[in-house]
Image (cartoon, rainbow, N blue to C red; front, side, top):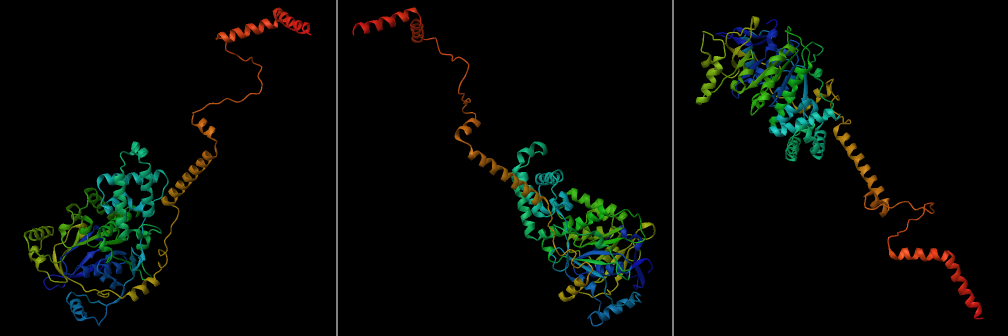
Length: 513
């Protein structure tokens, strides 16, 4: 199948080869079906097909089974005979076992290379979704991001955001005048939610070195596309963190990659497993964001494939953009199930040979109802397709095999060590330390001052400067009777009367002798 990814055989005897055209692979797709109907194997064979075509792939390994892509299938496997028989039935003449180039990633850094981003790159919208914030709390978070830009405070990890929120709380009276009400209750709620996701392991997601998107879009020496496998089995214990991270990655691809129009084949194919986690309880603004990314990212050469149990898990505006569809069996035990089954069947281009609704109910494990885009992007007629067997190992590899592949990777060591450069936490700590030192110095100066100086500085007492002599005549009070009589007596003594009195006194003294 030239310029196509071989999927399997259709028609009455499954002899008509069915494939996904590489030219339309960036028009997105859907893999749906009930648990145990073969969705994981379909994902595995699609990843193999894209890799053989030189297209890099990113997928999440929810159950741990997809690590087998890194190892070759074996003739000793219990399903070898069934695989060989199926390959012969669908005309897969060059079917052979082989391993594929795989790069393992893990947010926790244990089952793959660490994958990180920064708080600033995540942005307030996705972070609010992750923290499950109310509208008022989201408003405070937006203020925090705005202040980080204005104050030159890089938000790299969670402690940066936590420190910034503390600073906002201390300065909320001033900030409220400019940005609106900033309540301590909202800040406290955000801090509690940050603590929750930190306990879930989100602290390891945020930091540096951040993931370089070019490391996801590589080919090996043979020209095969690299298959990037994100270990998600433990990550699924925090579904909000899982969905938010994948949505962030999709948004980064949309924002960073250049426009390429309609390439002959995609630059990258992105598989979003357990897609319902993305849309469960999602606010309208987030759904609108996903719809925008899905509509526009195809011009960046990226194909997005959602994997879920029921097509109804995906909002209609997004579902309508998924041109390539592989529908495994759906169960219809309730009225709601039957309604969903009917709606799923109505989205396909009818095949006169069979009822689409009945086919979706009856297809067995490893079989699916498929419809791929054809010339000019027209949906193909629906077909019952027997999915081709995988060439790589069915099931997980061992821990030792995984460790060997990770050690041999050319990305080994690039993301292992965390960088902790100067950011909001350190800058705010320095500001607080400088303010504390200034306050201590002012207190020391105050303690050294005398009591009089302290009273003077407090405007309680005023005392003039002492002067030894003054040429100015001292002004004495003259408004009392006593002072007036004293001046008159002194003046008289200084005059003629005074001299007479003195002579009389002295004469009396000498006569007495």
